[in-house]
Length: 505
Image 1: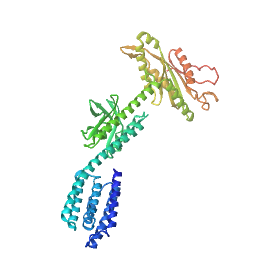
Image 2: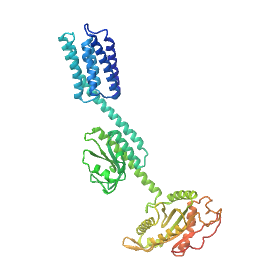
Image 3: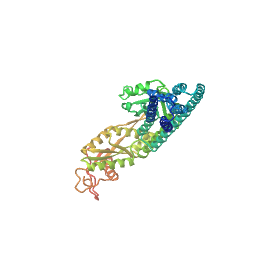
Image 4: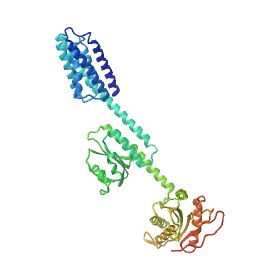
């Protein structure tokens, strides 16, 4: 559009310059000098108006008054009878670039009236002037109509191409994304580009009964974190008293067509919603583009969910959902490296359930699995958020305690765990007895001799070393019935046996 406008402005400016040059030579005999100067000034003013219209891509109300004057003056002054109609054609094409069809026709007819007045007042024979006016009017009206249709199709094609570029850019940005919040941010950015500035939109991700707003336009940022629920095609705020819900609530409750919902789906499964406050009259192509955008976002969210599930399967126990040995090893290395830089202690507790084989034999493996799930939940209740609870296999668990200031904190956790697992577990309709034996090892151990593996200056041990030490004292505790034992550390290469058992709770 801008290129076509630029081309017509150049042609029109060239015509104005040509008639400005011809003005001293082709002026009708008897034309006053002041009228010639007035015509020259009006031509220069029109040149400026057209140039400013090109820069701004629009014309104001006074611009029509300014650029209609030379049509009348040129028809009245110049002896070249086609000059005024040429300028009128250029003006018609320029004014057909912007505005509604009635406005374009009004501009065309207004310019034609000025040319007609100039020709009728000139020395040209009236019958010839009237014929020229009629022919010019029909031609100009046809040109205005055809050009309006042509530019409308060109604008639609340009908008469609722009939307396709946005979708292509979004597809590139979503490729490989596994962060749901980042995917939502890409969608919001695309909505602002497609629907224009001032649009209000929010993206919520999750399942039908629990969707969380993770990204919004700038004016809705405080609503991030609000919980929504999609129930039988109706969107509701899940927790109206939630602070984040106060801003998004009125938008959710607003009736269509102002509020528009675009489900974010993939393979007929809902992964989120795009909530947008769009104008009542929206281009159908824009709505179709929004739906395509949500389809791309749905595939990205489905991939993110699948990646998250695969990651959990790779680093978590499928039965208890606790960390597995791989994740425990990774977390242990991180904790030991941090301990080497800070004045803190890491403790590893190895737990083995007492009498678990009897549970499987008497109540069945399903009851045993249910008992393991209950034990896992109780273990999580006894540790801090940053600690790691892992299942090593069978009925053996491990607890990694990080950033301890005193090794005694590890024995306190062991006591809590023993109390939490003391007594039978209710599995189905049966009460299943269970006990636990715990082995504890810490690093660095305060009493470790200089240069030993437990000295802070020595390289930190690996998970296998810590498990070996904890296992050693755990079996000592199991041989005594239950409880916990604390491993004090041993020198590298030494076959030193564990110390005497620690205090029992």
